[in-house]
Length: 142
Length: 142
Image 1 (cartoon, helix red, strand yellow):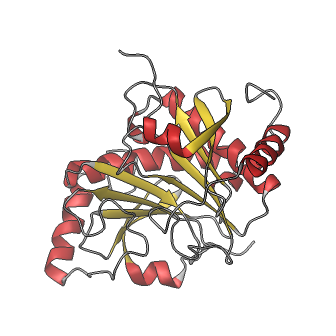
Image 2 (tube, rainbow over the protein chains, first blue to last red; image 1 turned 90 degrees about the vertical axis):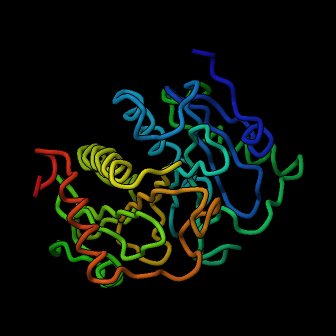
């Protein structure tokens, strides 16, 4: 099998934060919502339910850790967790912090309006905040 | 804690199929997409990541089994799995069989247009097909 390569659309729309046991943890480049994406480093993976048991367990643990990180950095009323992949087939799991004041509430963020990218300063600040909050011993940089 | 009670909006928009180790498995009453919903029988549950480890494991197994059931009954190009809960806070996980010919493609199904309910005959047929395909020994009726 070919080595893992990040889909170019995910690469263009999100920024690397760190690696977990299975996945890259990335920040979506969209200031409208605090929004993380997990991308398992498995070439050819597309459906969550087709992963082996061990990979599914690892992904579940990463979703939990990423969700708690997001809530700690950006208080929210509800987390939205989604694995869609209708456009980008490479398996990726969205974890989005939602508030009733946000642009798409109460609808989903996917396909709603256009992304509003970070400026360099706010991106640096956001990445620093997220990296400082990483669960110790779980993520590569923590 | 109070006993589990299904949210009235979920009750109105979906039909009981069977029970798994943790959750009710329900069919969304929307013929536009083959669409299952898992509702953990846990009073007060809202965020997937706040479930205990054992419940998370059980839910993951149910997502896998429900996803395979859906694919077997309704061939699709992509599964969409989502736990949103912006409108109905009771924890529920959507598993939707998507095709590039469906009404909302490639966008998400949530919030897209209006549901098209089953007529009694097609509902009976659909429920029979789903119940016949349940993974033996895993779901209550299988």
